[in-house]
Image 1 (tube, rainbow, N blue to C red):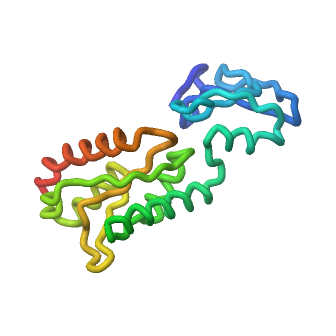
Image 2: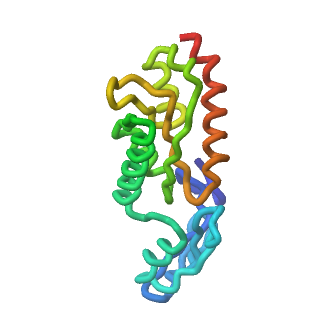
Length: 184
């Protein structure tokens, strides 16, 4: 993709923070100049914040609610998702490739349990799990005792949100997918 001054980069460049000690390392890229400001989660009270020194970066970002370490994000997703699935006497399906993608999509993971209508379970398991995993990036939930799909999924939101709003929105999206899934 091309951004700002026709620079090719995979994501939009909105800010650059570059510090050595407490000094800004001055440079520009894609029409953006470096500084000591960084951005957190949009819905956070610390959506924009200043990093005083390079050494304080991790602590400052952590205070903004961002989990920098990928392994920490992964562990939080796995632990919280396991707890949610156990709450409905289930396990969740998280193929490594999907889990890695979700870990890289969020900075402050918040797994949320969603539910869909039992009638979805009449669809072939592979069709339903493919739509959940490939198209929505949900983790399907299976029965602990039988391994059959349960009418639940786990989605991972990013940061402090209204879980009910996110749950209902994701449940509505999955309901909209039912018509096209019936074709299979």
